[in-house]
Length: 300
Image 1 (tube, rainbow, N blue to C red):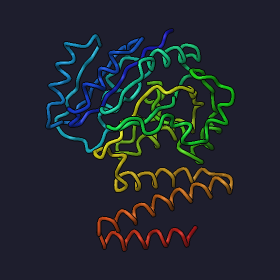
Image 2: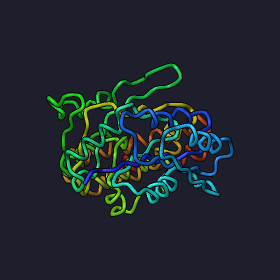
Image 3: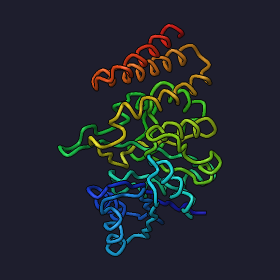
Image 4: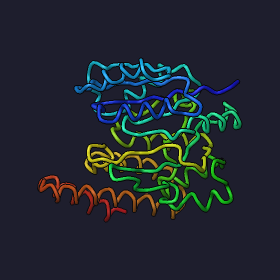
């Protein structure tokens, strides 16, 4: 049985980016079986642009319009995956791009690994903004995976066991959701956690790692846009969610080293929240968060 791959694109007011994003799907050397855009009640002309691209691009492209904004991408992503008829899927943010060989690389890897085994196939990515490329390789920046990839050539993959993946994720967020997932695994895990606006990716990869091996492709397969409007740029949004994920990881940590590293990551996120309150002159929040940071530091 050959794998099939859908690309799920959650959108919200993405008129400035959606054309480039969807064209990156159409320019693949091996096209995805489906591209599903789930629009989260945009108030700009995002939907109109997608409808126009449905006529222009040689893609199996569909759009689902939600009547009310969800407040984050998790619900649109869950809806998109639920409507997919493919064995595997990848999430492509509305402002990002796939490299031209992304789908063909993922497809050949999954066919080689075998559909029942390929729960998650992760890959490297670069980040860019309007001025150009900021980071050429997420893996190199994290500095955790390169030694473990060893002599793995560009385009080859390495499999990490569930236990290895959990240890890696406790040390560094080095297994990105710039990946392809098995739809059956998504169903088994209950989909993406809709309570998270930003840390849904950290939460989902952690849940995958607790049950499955993860294959890592030593190749940049996606390009991530950094701009002021992205959720990832807001400490107010991401830090509380990361703290929640790290605390759940802490509950499973067995070694003193793992606990120490997770505690340091929690403290760092708490400090970011304190500092963001100070910068924005939110004095009540600053006092409350300062006390929480002090209490946590004294407790642990």
